Amino acid sequence: MLRIDHVVCGVRDLDAAAERLWRDHGLGSAAGGRHPGQGTANRIVPLGDSYVELMAVVEPAETLESVFGRWVEVAVAGGDRLIAWVLSTDDLDGVASRLDLPVTVGSRARPDGVTLSWEMAGIEKTMADPSLPYFIAWDAPPELHPGRMEVQHRVRPQGISWVEVSAPRVKLDDWLGGEELPVRVEEHGTPALRSVGIATEEGEIVLR
Image (cartoon, rainbow, N blue to C red; front, side, top):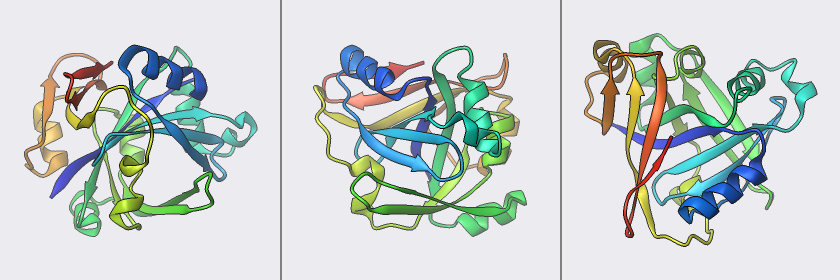
């Protein structure tokens, strides 16, 4: 079973992006940590069972040796924007086998010293086509999921309710293996993650 785990928003300045989300939408965030060897760091906007990840280059020199870091750097050259969506799965090996994808391992250290680890598949495809999600399996108990971090919000978020992408529907359906997910599809235009809906008790928030 696939579930929307998080979306990634590439930003040029983590603190400025966090302040904008707080000011415009009442969403708080917390420092996530750095990605060793990638030149990037993140802030987490926890939403319960899902989250928004603000991602920025913080060590430009490291991106010279990092495909991932360079991808983020290029993606935000024209300004902050949504760059990826990520699906969690209980059967990452099965998904990877179906799509003939390698499984890789990632980790980052939180400011409190806790190291989060995960396995993922398909991120290279997402870098080339951001309408396609990549897949993640967390090597951590549920209470350490980034969506469960404690922050102060002015609203009461209930999770990511939908995403909208530009993509041929057949291509996306094949990638998802026919699973039903809350995805709105615009079949025309450059492949992209166009917008994200966040449910709150006070009403819906839409990020673009």
